[in-house]
Length: 330
Image (cartoon, rainbow, N blue to C red; front, side, top):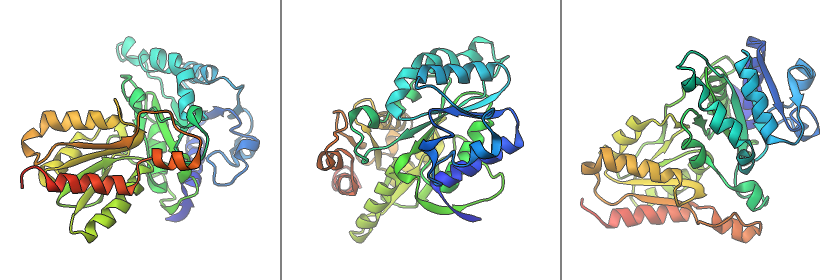
């Protein structure tokens, strides 16, 4: 095990994948140049090691980057491309949603399209409405795209390796505020399977399901609630598509209560899918209504105080848990 930052763990995964398979290459805006001079950023040093044939800077065109990925994967390569900010995925949507996501199905399963789209996400760095809006629910609504959202360095490495070597398209979301977070990471080719959630804090009274940086919001709330005698079980989804339904349902059947937490907006957010799935498959286990804790349905503000209010914090999670404990059946 090595102590690495989240960004360094991604860097190690890319390095390992490129060393194992010559068809793996990187492309994106500034992936080999000045944008990535910080050693904690994912493509740092890879241009020097692998050269411009396999680490390609691109024009500022998300549609072109996504089109490059689709075409290269169709020709037998394994592209790993970067979209700089989550909202810019809309500019790549035709290539990803109408082509990458559908070509395996349209070929009757005879052709594979092994491409990975890395995209930066996150609120609370003052980038404003056009650079901060999380679109995971939109991606999840596109059949044929897998969706990964890791919360820690070890999972980031293991999940990225699984994504790169998956036979079909994967959108891999990186929480920018986590790039400098330190953690123990296996040095070898240790992969985390897609579609397997992780119970990061066991509990008995209420289940909280979340992913990405919101995992730490949940853990802070769990610590506060524990002092009040409320035991919160925290599940880190790690992969949103495919979704580990069994992990969620097992927990809800134990606790009887559910909170879905995410930093994206509430209306039609991914938490609604979690709530619907549990209501359909474990309704009899519920002791209280399902609750969602999410951002308000407005664009992300650029003002620091407004931005801090926009992102759901531990206080809102704790309040939701207290509400659930106070209502419903025992």
